[in-house]
Amino acid sequence: MSTTPYVIMPSRGLVLIGGADRADFLQGLISNDIRRATADHAIWAALLTPQGKYLHDFFVVEIDGQYFLDCESERLMDLGSRLSKYKLRAQIELGIGEDYTVAVLLGTAALDRAGLPAEPGAARLLESGGIVYVDPRHSEAGARAILPKDGAEAALQSLGFEAGTPDDYDRVRLPLGLPDGSRDLIVEKSILLESNFDELNGVDWDKGCYMGQELTARTKYRGLIKKRMMPVDVDGPLPAAGTEILLGDKNAGEMRSGADGRGIALLRLEQAEKALNGEGRLVAGEATLTPRKPGWATF
Image (cartoon, rainbow, N blue to C red; front, side, top):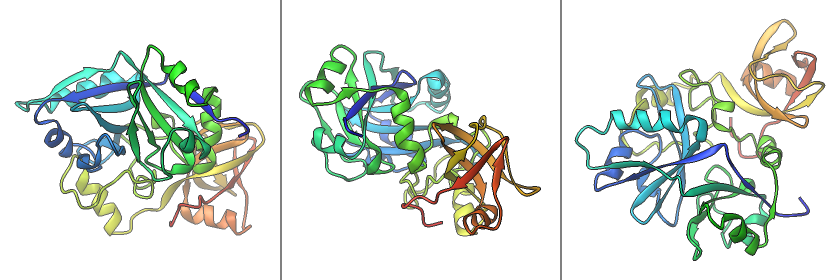
């Protein structure tokens, strides 16, 4: 990009968790190690069903003794409700960050402008209030910010950023294969390893038990992953999310989100490998898809 855009994200909201038991409370629920979420470091994590299926994902950072969970705004109340069910007698306080806004700062040049190293999750507090941090999934995605609503855009412009649009965010994340919440993961159906949480720093394998941990660990150690979420180039009309993908007459997966000739698809690894080797074409609706294995992927 010739400019360094920022995008205020109305699709994102904030759940706040404070109180003396906040760390122990979240540690037993989410897929990542909450002890790594500080004012200097952000994490990406998920809340799962007891059976290990996806419910919510969010970014977590700590500011002034509270965890800020950057989550989907349309599903914010559902997340808060689910968390409150597990509160029991824990000394925690749940709230909504109505006075804050979420922004993304796009591309690797954004890290220099924000004064951040190219290290996933690296964070720093801003003198004007709020925090900026490198996307914990991959530094090439740029950075994210949590800022007081009043003056958020002025604060970003003072750092040299220029206003962009949500389409700019898609143009960055889609080629990297980074999922965008329930646009790409199916609630109560998707599993973390098929969605690359293991390779994008969303799972901690040493933290101990959490909700859904048993299935997640069993899937890893038994080598049960037959599908993976992958970026795809789209030649033709963009297929709607949920469109079946075929290789010949065989099911090869399902389309997820997309824009401007790029997309993310959940692909059967066997069929994706054949397409990459020129042994057939992936077709979804009236479009042909070309899978792209991301540079970070080891699958």
